[in-house]
Length: 194
Image 1 (cartoon, one colour):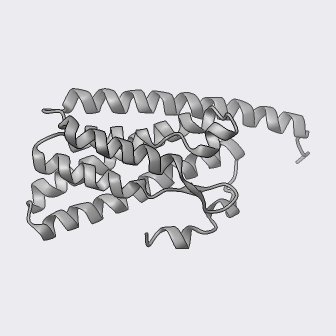
Image 2 (tube, rainbow, N blue to C red):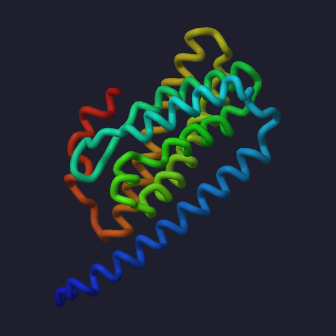
């Protein structure tokens, strides 16, 4: 099979990046539409605003795990928001989708004036945040609200967050580059336990 010229390969990657960007924009819009439409009650602003501020800061101050992957501790705020919303009768799905999406812009995006990466982050974080909120909400409805039930629901939601978020990253990378990038996943062993 003949090798493709480099210019054609970059052109195909460019088109695929646009496709992924459009998909993530549509995913984030659909996620927020469903989250708002199904929310019985909005979370209290006294709960949401401090969590948003903390989450925006933590997302902005992400750290590089390797050359291609960054991580942040905003997942802790995400779980706290989901549990708090579920306990107070608000929509954990909506709160978690908003919180997760609020950490879409990272310092490197501003410094390098990147547009596509924050859009990709917005889409994948809104979806994974909504999945976390749904898991917390359903977990607490099923297990109850005792301390152990809340811990179990949050632990399950944390696993869902990792699976959904990394699954989306894997699919996007695989589609854009037509292969998996092995060094993208280097350093993951240090992240998973956290």
